[in-house]
Length: 149
Image 1 (cartoon, rainbow, N blue to C red):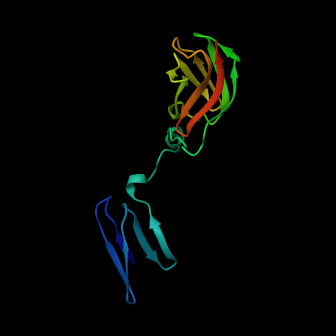
Image 2 (cartoon, rainbow, N blue to C red):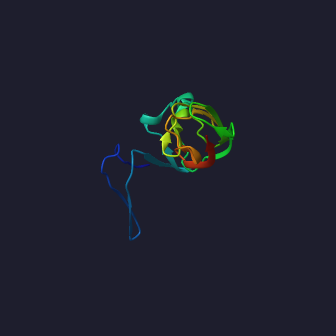
Image 3 (spheres, rainbow, N blue to C red):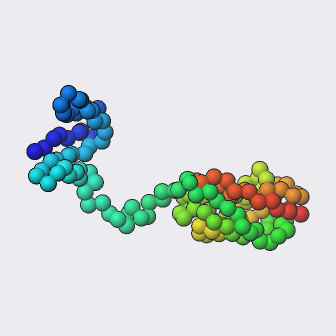
């Protein structure tokens, strides 16, 4: 026995009378059917046959994974130097990595290598002396003190 179908994200309301209680259901298009063995969910045509390789390649960024910087090489930097930043949770996909800055100055260039490595170039207007190197990802910002000569 079919209980009902809720339309494709339309405003729909379905009520089932059980004894003296009313239950209301709001939601996306999902069909529910009841047979001799109990209730089962019928998959809507819109999501039938999804491509698993496309799902794995989707750049969904995990905002719960906070980045951490463990090492910056070389130890002392100057304008124009290439810097290798290692750590963790920089983003499994490059779309999840947003940038590098030296103090408030954005890096001249940066490359997201992988989830634990980024390469950047010290910008011309990087503040000299002790400053912070900042990594910004979908999960937040990581900071590490560095020395710019």
